[in-house]
Length: 138
Image (cartoon, rainbow, N blue to C red; front, side, top):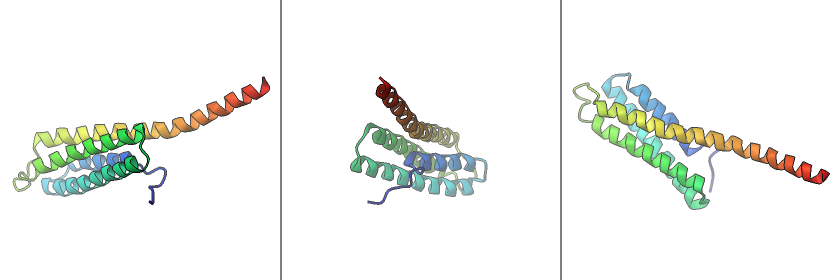
């Protein structure tokens, strides 16, 4: 099965979609609704990609990423469904704003964690190489 490039993780895709969703709060209601629908589709796709990762290679990190993407997608889906009736009036409900920020917090935290995990692997390899070099001297 084809995989995503190394630097493209489902959590990072969800974080980008959540950032677009928060940015859409600044525009008109109809444009914001359209962007919210696209962001919902992107987050559901990221959650599905995370699910496929769990199925292919089960690990605690993959399950964490699946949970974060799924929660962010559900928050975005809830906000989009709340936004739909008010598109005609041109207003954005206050709950939509809170759900968008919460989705950004969840997906952003997972994206930062994936970035940290990527660099921690490099640091662990350096640590192991240093320990191996020290044990060869002894």
